[in-house]
Image 1: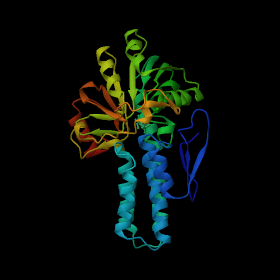
Image 2 (image 1 turned 90 degrees about the vertical axis):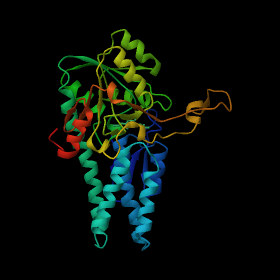
Image 3 (image 1 turned 120 degrees about the vertical axis):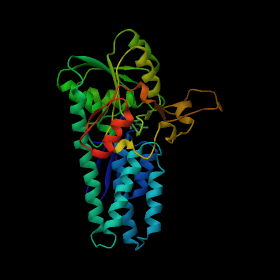
Image 4 (image 1 turned 180 degrees about the vertical axis):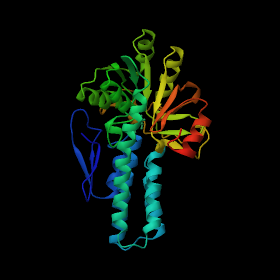
Length: 345
Ligand code: MRU
């Protein structure tokens, strides 16, 4: 099962809005189909939308080449259109900018499209490798069977392969140190129940599904010994944007003295932002809250606030697991080292 795969001339995306009931793929022959899939969460998860956007750049520039329209203006417009599809996960802008770098270097060359395809494939391959590496660091945190709670979906479906937080859980499980995973349902779009529970069951990792509002009680009962979540953007001070509800889980973990870990690759760090206050938070349509599977569950016309992400302040985070090691507070220092040295944290 792969969320995203390049088929030589088009991008194949597993339509995650249909899971777990249907396994169906979308064939993206043009960049607009990819952009729509990102907006509609047919492909979702920070690293996965980064890789998808990289392939969308290949498809978009291919169209411009065919029409003899590879002007700077058109290329910039394409990049901006893709970046605007989802504003919070920095991986998306990071991947588009990386592709723009290739355009700059090979703009005049006849093999520009090959170079772009190679770069997108490299972004995808690197994502896999990085996830394996960070999973190894993360697994070292656990030396005995541990019940771990996670929020949203940070697994194979959210990445090119293996996952970030769920990758750590997979690796820790393979070493015998996961007794059970508690998956928060993750309202309003249910990534926890539809995707995380499904992924873990496919791998025969013991998972118990709970609604978001049960997390505190489960902790209070001593049923959870650690929390691991993914991230959509991490700022220089270690503040973390992730799926709405993550902040509440972090507060609960602090109250119950449970370590709260974030797992994310270097591509999720935004070195241009000092704190989480600067992170743009995507707001999505009210119907995601007022309706469940097309059925209305709220009074017609009720005002709705639907932020897709929240920011967890660094003070609530025990450690940030990266492919270069586990960062600890004070995060300004460890993140500065990550930026400067890469690989020598
Ligand atoms: O709205 P989504 O489903 O794209 O949100 C996904 C998350 O918040 C994940 O936890 C995050 O992207 C990390 S995935 C490795």
